[in-house]
Length: 135
Image (tube, rainbow, N blue to C red):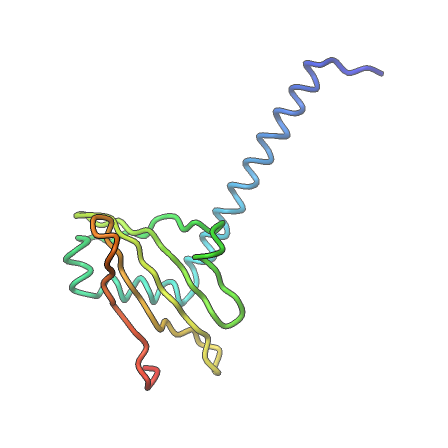
């Protein structure tokens, strides 16, 4: 039984499209999983309630797609999480950096939050730094 080259090309094209689609769906699912975590929601809440951040970015502050493939900046390992989240406000764009840890009660605590603005990339606004009392 012989298969024509055209049939093989069609099979290859369909396989390629299916592979790319599955990859995109997987990345989207990972992105949504991160955005559903308590630490992610708490970090965004801190930024959206910080007067300086709101003034600099402008309201509403929207979080954009996380680069989940960038394991250097975006990861959760055991009881530690670190993420770099692009933000967009009505005045300008920025990047939210945050670090979180899980405590002995299995509750996630966001212990540091920084905001970097697109037009001032060499400086960051410190929104939260963990105090010694771990509050």
